Image 1: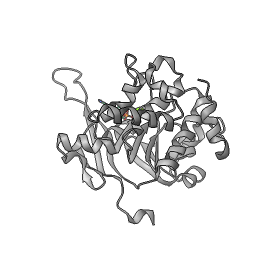
Image 2 (image 1 turned 90 degrees about the vertical axis):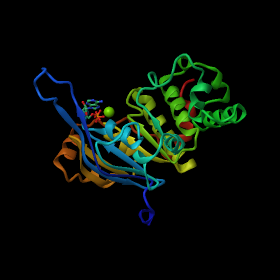
Image 3 (image 1 turned 120 degrees about the horizontal axis):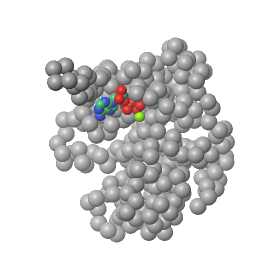
Image 4 (image 1 turned 30 degrees about the vertical axis):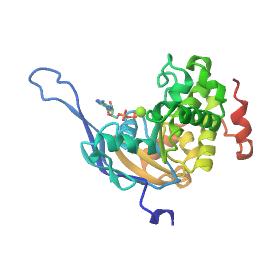
Length: 280
Ligand code: ADP
Ligand code: MG
């Protein structure tokens, strides 16, 4: 019944080719097909996981879904609009509805800026009073304090820095958050807390996720649907439980055989507690 509505995000036969430097003056420039005919539909309120080994095209898919780069062919639609047909001002406005969280909370936060400024960055055009209250609200939503806005990134742990990155993504109240390996730079002990925060935020704000991870346990924990990527193609897709319990494609089976389970996630009732227990 969800699926009768048009999808929030849709990729139609998306291809992305990168041309690499020539090895010699006379050699043809080699090219790599990072995405080959990728189609998917993500409906509002759902969470779609993307799994696949390193180099399978996951981050390319994320950048294309976020209109950070254009496909070589194919279409990307957000709420029915072709993202790559928007003018610069339209795209800037549309970006408030889709935000990204990157893997590395160290690299993605400018160390010279205070947290308040970092978190407010997607609100560039809003007035200062509105910015301050929005920052306080976003920090609160991720389990940090309004006063943390005055601090610098180095004053926080890895998990807290990723909470700051999530607050920055949340601040425009986006419909979609694309998270590319959001916990893979974190200590295993902190990973489940950040994933549970994502789940809580989805329940609270109805945000939709495209969650990319090489770690099947991460996707299993958060996502209701999954696509499995190999060499730039989707080789299997469907309900997460079903795919992980009864994989059909040999590549999915090999991924499952290779994966080590994450430390067991906290039960749902312990989630909120776990979020605030992280050492500050
Ligand atoms: P994943 O995130 O699954 O590890 P990526 O999307 O980063 O995969 O990369 C897919 C393939 O595309 C890899 O072979 C990678 O080397 C190549 N690739 C990605 N980005 C670029 C780029 N900007 N220029 C050239 N090749 C790239
Ligand atoms: Mg990647």
